[in-house]
Amino acid sequence: MEKVYKLLKTVGGWNIAIGVLLIVFGITLGILNIVSGANLIRNRKNILF
Image (cartoon, rainbow, N blue to C red; front, side, top):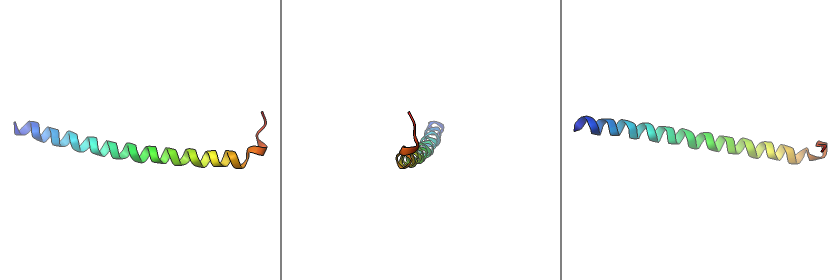
């Protein structure tokens, strides 16, 4: 029974670590999208359709 609890603790720790990494990755991509959108808006007179 103790082996199962140790496994659950390890898996839970990995899940928390992966969750934190995904949150950081998502925030980083969101910031990059905002910056690139701001660059497009700033340079919209140079865009030809």
